[in-house]
Image (cartoon, rainbow, N blue to C red):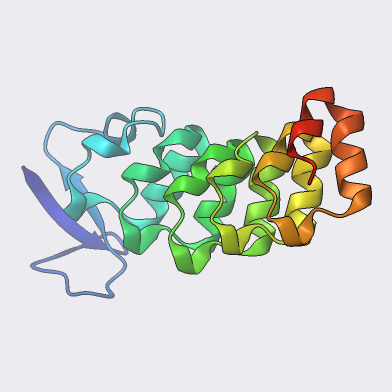
Length: 163
């Protein structure tokens, strides 16, 4: 049960889209709503804010999938991916930049989760440096002699992915 909606500590009868408001929920403190930032998936959608989403992701990186699409901003997605590269799976297409893909590949062995168009030469190089077996997922056009050599030096198993 919502007790009140407030803007700048003044109670409002109603809020309209674009208003920067806070809310009070009867019997529930904000820290209970976000369970130290981790359980945003249990917060009713109408109470989720950009700030609450950011706090949740900062405290528990694997909650990006529960952040409403409208709050999956570049900044929030970057925090999640930096903490756990696997979060790239829940980043909206328009936010999936080469920089974010690079960050994901550096922090987790998730190269195979990237879409073909996100596997740029630079991203492929970082993935192969991290783990030679990533060569399996490198598009043929980026499999240079030096990249293949690096992959095999990293991991002998990678030679089966050399053209």
